[in-house]
Length: 134
Image 1 (tube, one colour):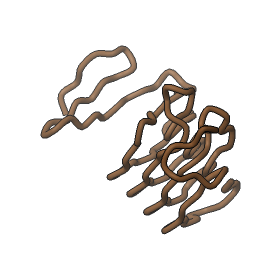
Image 2: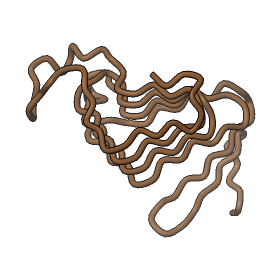
Image 3: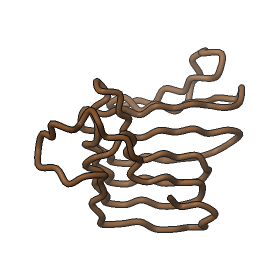
């Protein structure tokens, strides 16, 4: 857990609750969190291989680059990256690979503006779900 840190940098790491090799018969029992971020941190080239939640983000101004989450599969109740954010926060995810896991975003305030990249175009969706031009 990175709490109260400022520009903490986690890189080139393999993190997990248990040592696993490929398929684990205990995957449904994984209950931990690989990394918990509470603001203004960078995660680069990190692999989360066994946990219920790969990365939990509750603070602002984080960047996740080259993260590979193959923790507990979403079909078993796991989450690759969990965003629980409020206010005007920015968390960027660049080049991350979620292997049978998902991103779950819980937005705690009414202001919401998503920028979604799909192939070669950008889609922006406001809180009222109206489509905006970039």
